[in-house]
Each structure stands twice: as C-alpha cells, then as structure tokens.
Image (cartoon, rainbow, N blue to C red; front, side):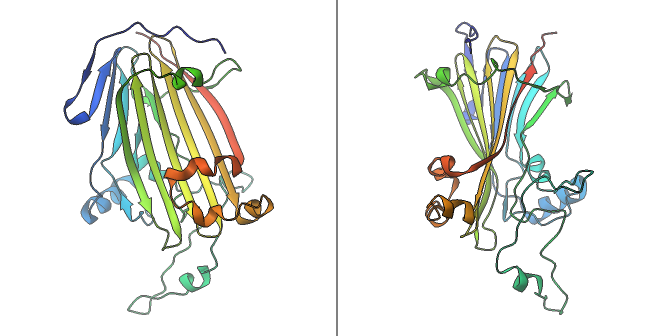
Length: 285
C-alpha cells in the first residue's frame, strides 16, 4: 500500500481538562463521566425504546466525537448506540447475527422468583445477556448516515505510520459500559483515540469473557491521514469457545485473562468470524 501524503504541520489547540483538540479542520471531543443513575436510565429506556436490562455500569454520558467542519463528516462512539447493538437481529432465513449460548447455571436463573413469587425472566431471544454488541461506531455526513464502501486491496490502515514514534498530541480513553455477568465473567466496551500531527487512530473494543466458557473480542479501528480524502474503518470480530481453546491447549486463558487490558494475550488464539474494511470519502464543500 502506498502511503498517502500527510498534511503539513499545522497549529493545534488543546481544550481545557484534556477534553479534546482542534487540528487540521477537525474537532475532537471526549467525555468520561460517572455511571448513570436510575432516573437517567429510565429516561433512556423510555426515549430510546431499549426495553431490556441495562449493564451494571452504564456510562450514558460518555462519548467520543470527531467532526470535520468542511465535509460535515462526524465519526463518533457513544454508550446508547453501543447498547442498542446488544439487541439480536434475525435475518430472513432465521439466522441470528452472533453466537449465543447459556452457561450451566441458566436453569437455576430461569426458575427464580421474586419476593411475590413471580417468575423472573432472565433469558430473552431478542437480547444478548452477555452485552455483546455489533456496534462499530457512528459515522455521519451532514447528520445522515455516511456512505461506506468496501475498501480496495491498496486501501487500509497504515500501520507502519502508526508504529512511528511521532509525538501524540492528544490521547483519550472512555468506557461505555461494563458488567460482571452475574459474577460469571466480564463484558465491556471501551474507546481509545490518539491524535498525532499527521493522522488520528481510534480503537473501539467490545470485550467478553464468560468463566470457563467463552472469549470474544469485537474491534473497530478508524484511521485517517489529515489532508487526504479517505477515512478507513476496519471491523474485526474474533471469538473462541472452551472447546476451541482445548484443541489448542489454551483453555487456561479462560481463567487467566481476566479483563480487556490483557486482550493481546488471546488475540492469536481466537477464531476470526468477520474481517472487513470500509472507506468513507471526506468531501470538501
């Protein structure tokens, strides 16, 4: 892949409290706030139609937005859209959009009752209890969904450029949600960004570990070289069941890798179920 010509060095402005940066006609903002309270959660459920249980820690105010003034392009990640992706979609052939499973305790959970003897329903066909989301960011052009086209072979993230030791002008990390899955693992969605003088790079990662059962990493990477007209989006989804890991003599990873900060330890052990790249054109008005 031939390297695009990056933009020339340009002045930039850092925002107070490390909330963002303005550079090359782009405005980057990130918010990292507290967990939403009950009142806020109910408002979101009512307004967004999300009528399923929310994760233990839902950071409804957390977000990343990257706006390009001239083209009207906005690249973003937010908690509500991420949670919306936990709803299971079924295609015309009756196939669901992800691998679903129950843990060995599901019979006890499904037979639970509340203090009034009413059955507590814990399994739903339309909702992923592991908080696996297919969310890959929100990309818009003048407020409408931006056109994404499949990337050509010579279009991709320039990892050689990212490996260079160029100074990072601004870095941010924010959590969208977390849950411990009834003390049987952990599920989370985290977004990181770094902005250099010549480009920016975003990693949105959905991480899932179910004790002694399953590992999953759904990654979305977004890359843009300032001054060029292409935004590259790479979507990679990987997972492994216990039986997958047993075949590789790696079942110990189900208990040793406790959170997403150690995801790189399992990356090569997971089965790739989706690996796609797209391009969004940055049009100047």
